[in-house]
Length: 361
Image 1 (cartoon, helix red, strand yellow):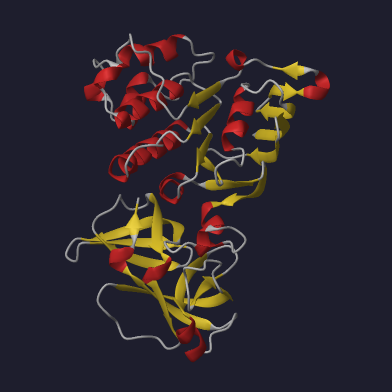
Image 2 (cartoon, one colour):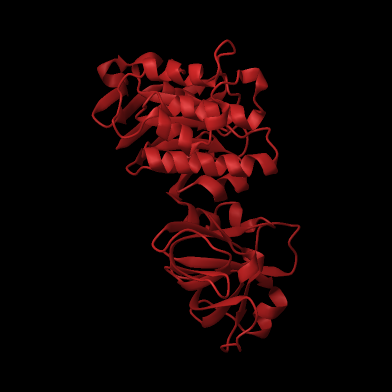
């Protein structure tokens, strides 16, 4: 378990962060610019000497101000991936990775150089010098180098910053795969929704130097106190598993906590865990069970809440969340439809979801 309770003052800015991480996977640290995301990561890495409080990683105390414990960065089993790759220019890719291996504080038998190269798709790059790598390739090598230090905590400070969407999406999938395979807990600073949707299992949302929310990604995306559900491109993320494939219809059938879904294409193998991204605009409601239609999924759900989005660009619409506090689906429908159907919290409705709008990773 990782336990953090720290403060850090820099000029007029003050960080005050308290949280615990008790699961592997990726925890996104997000918020608008200037909320303290980078300062938090730097404090955890020992790069902010003015940080005070407590940082415990497993049985190790990296910081305990009351006991006058303050481990320097080189004594903390931490990996750090910066916004720029910071590869050694005089070493090729293999040399950069080997550098990390030789200096690892504690080598774990759980994965090897070969594994990391496989996870991040680096086989064809091993002999290249950094200046011959694209920006995306450099970021993947930087992640691999951090993993091969065998850290107990991996920090990533907006490593996809500056890359276009076409390049960043596959790299995000490589990063997620590597993080899950290594089982090292990751704190990933970002300010973009696409990275949240692709990577995060949990989210720490920061405002004015302090976490104001710490929870699972699905809950964060529909929480009315946070900005995501009020965005024009608001989305849901649901975690589920592959049930089976329909070869004739070219469909993948999924099991979720809300019910069964079918999506075009073939994803994973039966039993595989998947994340399912559903845009709010791809969901509609009816009071009566509709006749089967082409490409629609149907879920019978109770309405949990109805609220007007806090976005002046969204006029004449309502955010409707259907399901339970634990498992739910957010949709955006017109105020006219909401009034016409006389929808209210507690009513049971049929949610229709366009199959072609669902993304599975």
